[in-house]
Image (cartoon, rainbow, N blue to C red; front, side):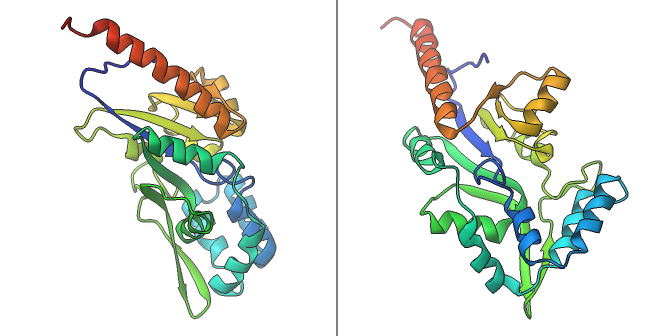
Length: 233
């Protein structure tokens, strides 16, 4: 990646949550553990292309029994990838902006981050609400044009007038749309397979430790480039 550093761009991390920060998909786990089994039929309709992602997730979340109290109890079995917490601390030390961007459940994400003592700059996710132990899902970051997922991730990478280096970290189909838009992309699992099929350049990773190593190498090269192009004193 070639980037001009004379305008001191902000390095902004955009990280997927389920299967990337967590060791498995927390939404699927909650459905398996707490929802009426009919959620599987809804999943089949989505796989067949009969309904979009928002329709699928909204219908499935409504089937979760026991409200937030049951969800919170179940989350004791959900854990972060072991190197994630230290990676966020390292990003903060470097002055990077760190965002969690997920097509999952915001309340779950906030709860798990707080449980692990992790502070991030922003969380962009579908809004989980509860009324009388009944859960519902709302989509504040959806786009009504051609985007059918709950959180339109590529919208978050649109220019905002500030020089920015966008670092995207992801693993699944909700990350397909912004794979080509990232300045620096880290991918595994379904996203890596998609990038290979579409000839999209990416950095493979198996932990946040490997992501950090790649970023440290990139920072060293960027620093060297900056010093070589600096005006003589």
